Structures are given as structure tokens and as C-alpha cells.
Length: 540
Image (cartoon, rainbow, N blue to C red; front, side, top):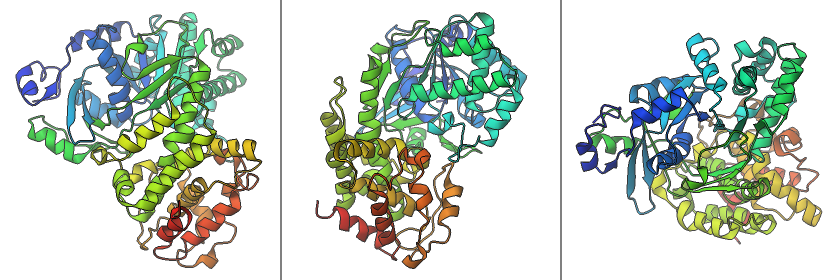
């Protein structure tokens, strides 16, 4: 059984193996998308394929869409070469239930995979064709928070951004430059309207995307690459809209065990690959069943019937903002960011196993959400914060079959701590004058910085998860030695006071010194992390 267009034409073996197949003509919906694209997506990894691709698959099954999604990769071209092309752009969805059962479904909603490489004329010209099409209605994004970043923590351009500004649209490399170059192509083709829909886990993600695109546009205007008319086009949200969204679906790395199980069922070549850029990906994607996608309904060129997709809610901007704040700044992501890095340093591989077996870590997780987050979270109306958190702790977080690792939760934390903790800290300052009554959130920040020392609670070294600030933070902490607390002096000052990282100066909020104290206790020696966590949450 090959996961290819020809391979799924012999339906019998697939159905016998319990793997559902597309009920629509995969080749037809692909061809339609190639001729008249409607929906483009940037960032075509795991979360895209099982969630966004899964929504499109459902709409195709229901007859609510008649063409697939055009898939664009701006960062890791191996994904297109190793996961899309050999499998004719098909994906295999594996939904993991808490009772250990699984749902298998082949997804045929991904029409083509284009590499956004300005240095490869065939790919670049194809991308231009797509963006020049009047039929194109929306471009969505799952490129992670760092995909929108143009400047480093000190306010200077990232080197690749400086190069993109200098080289102009024809030689764009970074995601924001590529997108702006394609918008320029669309502008020249007829000033056609378009919605650019960030689906990444960041506060006011549409605004963040808009700021980056406008910045690139204005820098190119200064350099003489584009004119005032293009700036006006990108600035007009009646022509180029940037809807805000909230997205939620826990999607771990592909499981080798699931790959083995699929091959035992007869599906060939299912093993995960690690690309040259350290993307861990497979022909299948495994994830939980629950999913939420709240989208601001702002689409100047029309849109697919997104509201008919599983877990999708169309709303106004304020409702989206409240839903996103509920999830990203209070209920889910802060729990991950507070406990995931700590879990690595404590020696726990799996997030669910840690919560299910370590009473203190479960208490800490609950404190972050229930005790410290819920009291200051506004209710978005369409989703209940209390019910959302209850579902997380009763059903989603304890699901060990997900196989979600603490190391995955430690990826890019420096890009997230401001979003995931800063909003609650600011809310406490607004409500109480300072945030000194917080305990679990400062403990999580101290735990993240302790994790950055790359030495676990037993004294063993480990490799950090990818993060653009790893080198910078490790350089600041290089003189700190675990087991020698006297080596800790003022190394955290520059980090905890950096408003580019936390959106606030943590010393001015009343938690900076508390974090320093917790961190100091965590480096006392073997077992100090566990003892520190117990000290602060054990009585709760």
C-alpha cells in the first residue's frame, strides 16, 4: 500500500486496514487549485497538514470546497522534497484518543507544494502566477512566531532581513520578504484584494503579520524598489486584510511507534525524517482530536465556507482577541511554557507522563491556569474559559497516547514568554498594582532559565531545543555553575528587564527578584530543581 494517488485507487487493502480514503476526486481538486487557486498556505509542516489540511479535507468531503490548498514552504525545502513530492502531496492523519484508539484518514486536500525560492526561477515564477490570480482569496500561515520577526532583541535587523531589504523583491529569502514580493506581484497584476490569515500562536497575530509586511514594504519604498501606490495598497485593509485568529490543537512530533504500526498494516515508507534544518516530519501526522480555530471574518475577496469546518468559529476581531488571550496567555500555552522546559531539566521526556506521575508538577500546571490565569482572563463568549481549562486537565493534558515531549514544548520559548506570561503579569499590575502575588508563573520563568543551563537535576548535560536566542542567553549565563550558587550574581538582570522579551520590565512588576531567588535555589546542586518546585507549590 503506497501513499500515492495511484496507490489509493485500490481501495480494498486500505479499507481493510481501517484507513479512510478521500471520498472526492483527489486529482480533480488538485488540478482545479493549480488552474484557479483560492487558498494558499505558508508553512506546510505538521500542524498545517492535520489541522488546516484536515479542515479543507472535511469541506471537500461535504462538497463545500471544490479545490485543494496550494502549499508553500519558505524555510525548509526538504519538507517539499521528502514529504510532499514522493507521496503525491497526500497526507495521513492519525487522531489519537485518550483511550488508546486511533482514527486513520488519508488527506487529499493539498494540491501542490511550491518552494518559495527566489533563486530557482521555476518555483519563483510559479509562486508569482499563483499570487497574480484574481481567484485567490486567502493566504494562511503557520510559520511560528519567529517567522514574523524582523528584528533581534536589541532592535537591529536579523542579517537575512537586512539582506532582503537591500536586495529587493526579486531576491527575497525570508518569509516576510517573500510574502511582500508576492503581494507586489498581485498589486502589479491588478491590485486584487486578498486576506492574509496568520494562524500562529501569538497575541494579535494578524496585527503582527501586518506590521512585518508594512515594515518590509516601507523599507523597499525607501530603497526605491516599490512606489507609493504599493504602500497604499498594502496599507488598505479593504484590499489587503489581516484577520486575527486563535488556533488550538496539540500536535506532537510524528511517533516512530505509529510509523511502525502503519507499516505493519501494510502502508509503505512511513518512517519520520529529520531534515537538514532539524524539522522532524513524516508522511503521517499524529495529533489529538479536539481543535479550535476562531477567525476574524474579514475577507475582501470572499472566502471558502470555513465556518462549516470542524472546530472553526467565525467571529469579529474582539471575540478572536479574547479567545486568543484565553488560550495563549492563560489556559493552555502558559502551562506548556511554564512546565515543559522544567520537565526537560527534571528528566521527564513526556509531558503527560510528567503531569500524571509528578504531583508537584501537576499542581504547578494547575496553578498557572486555574489560580493565576483564570482570575484575570476575559470571557470571549463563544468559548468558556472554565470549560476550556477543565477539558485540558480532564482530557487533553493527561493523554499519554499523544506522546508530546517536554523538549518540543521548549522550542522557541524565548519568542513566547512575553506572550504567554507577560499579558497575565500586566493584568495583575493593572488589578493589584504589581504582580508579586504570582508564584507559578515566576517559577516557570525561573525554570526556563534554569533549563537554559543545559544541565539536568541529576547533573547530566542535554541538548537544548532550537531557539533563536539560545546562544545569546547561554552567553549571558556562561559563568553560572550548577552546584555553585555563588557563581550567580547579576546574570539575569539583562534578560528579566528586557521588554522585547517579556513586553514588560519584570523588576518593575514585582516579580524580577522573585524569579532570581527561585533560580538561585534551583542551581544549589543535584535535586535542587525538584526541591524548589516542591517548596513553592507543594502546599497548594
